Each structure stands twice: as structure tokens, then as C-alpha cells.
Length: 288
Image 1 (cartoon, helix red, strand yellow):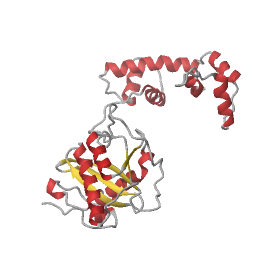
Image 2 (cartoon, helix red, strand yellow):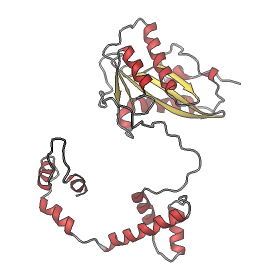
Image 3 (cartoon, one colour):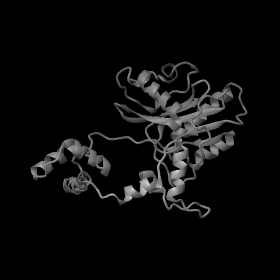
Image 4 (cartoon, helix red, strand yellow):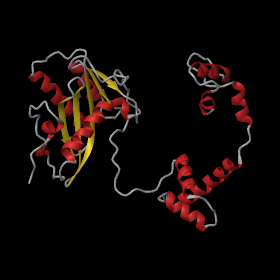
């Protein structure tokens, strides 16, 4: 029902309007049979007592949340409502706060690495989650993550060959500017040039939609190297699943395996020639 309501009367680029009957016909062809009369009956149905109660509670929940500087979570909102004589279950408050998109303040700082730039042109997804190429240098995947150290947050970028799962380039820095991912790309190109691979024609460089990867400097460098940029969708880790997996291994084998260490720019060494695990390829000598 919700799908039909969201798409009915939608006008396509060629001027065609989506109607209820065509949408129902397409849904039925794809294994979700529904009659137009069922949709119209649902539209005419009066809201139930539970639905009316939910709408009333949403108003009260949002009021309590805003009156308390938008920092209350479900537990405190639930307690406050019951103090005011509005009986409601905690699970109901949790459900309705999710529907409203409300949440309480969180301790600690949340790090967000994929920040898209709405003004930057975005390349299409040329990989479509196919991370099993038939030869090296067919698909490279790239991503970066953050690591908490005694010296503060450090961002680590990777470039990985999808065929061999080998880390071709990586870089650590205190900021997540374009230079971070650009340096990792330069290291990957240098790695292949050192092995005598001068022509990377046909290479697809795949990443998420972060502004670093859609920047002019990065896309121009890809063009100079003969690589085609490929960008996944926003907020979908499956579109860059291989890079996400390698980052998970990096954190498991290198970061979480031992205590945190101080980090300085000098502790981000150049590639050591290893073709093995992320531990062998990425572990830096400890600093004192």
C-alpha cells in the first residue's frame, strides 16, 4: 500500500503518469498480486483506535523531547510522560521515536567518513557489486576508516586490487581531506609501476560517494592514470562490500589485536612489499 501511495500520480520524464492500475499490474507480474480495489479500500478505511492513539502520543513524545533540549532518549521520555499522567509503555515510546526519527544524545563523538558532496558530479556504479574480476588491475576498490589512538583520531585510506585482495596503496593522516585518498592512490600506482605495469587501461576504480572520491583533483588523477571512476550509492555498505571487509580485517588484525599506540606522521611508513595479510602489509613499528 505504501509503495503505491508513494508512486501514484508520479510523472516520468516523457510525460507519462503512473496510475494505480498499471502499478498493481506490474506488482502482480513480479509476484506481489494486489487488486486496485484493495488499494482504494485501504485509502477509504478509517484509522483504528490504536493508530489514533499513536498519533496523539507522537505529539506528546515530540513535545517532551523538544522541551528537554532534544537530548532525552526513549527511557527518559517514557518516564516523563508517565510522570505527567500519560500512561504509555516504554516499547511504544521506542517504536514511535524511531518512526519520528528522534534519538537521545550519545556519549562520545560519532565519526562519519562518507560525506557526499551534493554539488559534485557523481560517476555511475560500474561494478554493481561484482567483486570477482578475472585478472589483476581490472577493479580496484578504495575506502578509508578512522582509528582511535592515544594521540587522537587517525584516518587510514586503502586501495585494494579486487582480484588478489592485495592492498596496493594506503595512507594514514590526521584529517580526511582529499590528500588522504589521493596519496593512497599514488602509492597504488607506484606499486604497479614498480612491477613494470605501465598501462592501466580498462581499470575501474570503485569507491563510495564520499566527497574526497568525487573531488576534481581525485577524478583528474584517475583520468591521467587511465582508470574509470565508479561510485556506489550513499549509505549502502554492500555497494563497496569488498573494501568494507578489508577494513574490518585491518581493524581486527592490526588495531584490535593489541593496545592502542601513539601515532605520528613518521609512523605511517611506505609499503613494505608484502602481499600477505593486512597485518603484514599495514603494521607499523611502534613509537615510543
